[in-house]
Image (cartoon, rainbow, N blue to C red; front, top):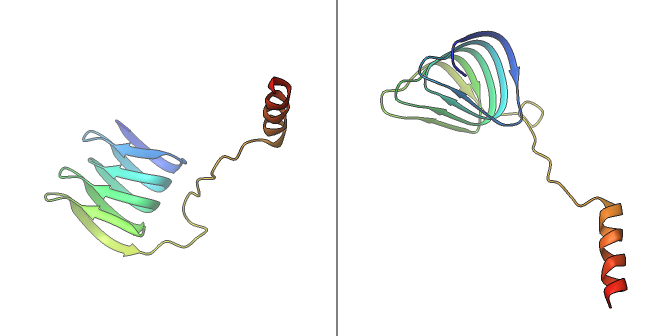
Amino acid sequence: MDGYMEGKINTEKTLVISRSGRVKGEIIADKVIINGLFEGECYANHVEILPDGKAQGCIHSDELSIERGGQFIGESQPTAEDQVVKLQKSEPKPELADQASKQDNAAS
């Protein structure tokens, strides 16, 4: 994220706030990397505040790391199950598994 954004961001992936990035609002993501400015509420599985990062507000995460030089003003809370992004493991679709077994049987 470069530039300024105000509002709500919801992603199942990693959100990176670059040195020139400014985010004010609510973030819900799998992982958040802050190297610019963040102000608001953050819900993530992993949060990293890099040396040029500044975060102010409330961070809900079980894995919070702040590198030397990074700043955090606010409070940190453990995550609740329903607050963070759940990544679903992809399982093979039944019709694809059936086709594969039919092809294996036909090859025999």
